[in-house]
Length: 420
Ligand code: EPZ
Image 1 (cartoon, rainbow, N blue to C red):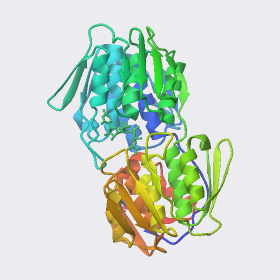
Image 2 (cartoon, rainbow, N blue to C red):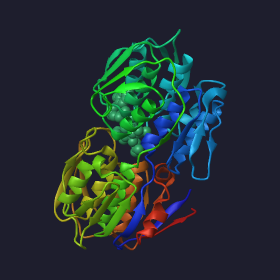
Image 3 (tube, helix red, strand yellow):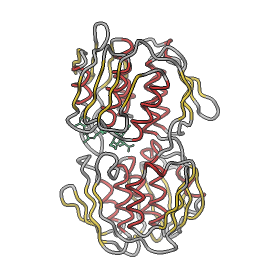
Image 4 (cartoon, rainbow, N blue to C red):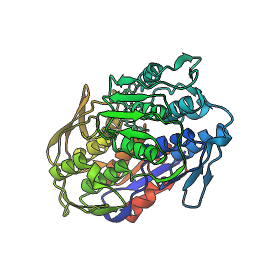
């Protein structure tokens, strides 16, 4: 397993481009199953998870055509069966996103039950109960979700007990070809849900309310092919901005969208960052100053995103003062804390809150990544440490960050990948 070797103490300076959003690309690739016509998906990020989703479509008999820019053309008319095997689902929970499309287009679907992961038990009960409310017969047996419906799914009024991003996405996709109207109350408002809805509308779906907590879908008889470009990745954007703030640097991120990062930009300004924005770029300048600690609480969009909690914990660990960070979305998303404390951070965990007392700098150490965003936070910790840090198990990082060491090298970081 590769490792990343980091020599810290360098301020990040320069410009990078942001890739397409992983969490938008995954549901949009699943949505290609909703039509027999060709869908071209552009601006896909070069990530393991994208490869896994393409492999998943392939194992069902759908052979995507990939061009040199990793734009993908998918035509699902060659599909052979409707099953997502455990071998693939265990490597990527987002495989659950084929459940709704397969069920509503073909009347049947079999998807391995995604196990839990480092950050929590990650149940999918809300996906299942919503599809049952639409008339599907769903059983969970031998570790598989087996769903079927005679004829078409029926539109229903669904209240989601919890805000669930992929749950909202699965139901929205299932509802596009159902008979009648589906209303999703307490729907997720994340920009990635909006991006999926906009792609479905381009395919001919009748959807309103995306981006609010009530999404209304009127079923249509069929969807058409289209070409769609995935939105920029707001989590990748925020990760680099936080790394620049932690290292007292000055960077500009391009091909991104500042309008969907308001909660993050506001916290970075509280940390002392000087931020300028344009239509598709963000410039962050610390003027060489050490960041100030901030307190925050994660929650569903538009609140502060849970996917940037670990990165801000790394920033707070070297900030002036103390900050409290509360995680309200997942039950076990502090795995990075123990590793940071081994690097000299002063972080206490109390329930779902971490209390961080900033120190001037950390001490490099060998650390281990446990999940995607924790890995990014350990890289940030390495960037603000004296001497050398090695981050192990970085297959986590390759799932969600395109060419991370190349982009950080472009910004002046002393980081390289070493085979272990
Ligand atoms: C999506 O995961 C993202 N993944 C996650 O990003 C992100 O952290 C999360 O949303 C929250 O924003 C993708 O979009 C592929 P949820 P998802 O369903 O949909 C509970 C990353 O790093 N819940 O919104 O799986 C659940 O346990 C990843 O890119 C149920 O109880 O998350 C959690 O506590 C990590 N039952 C809460 O809801 C259900 O049926 C929110 O989970 C579904 C969810």
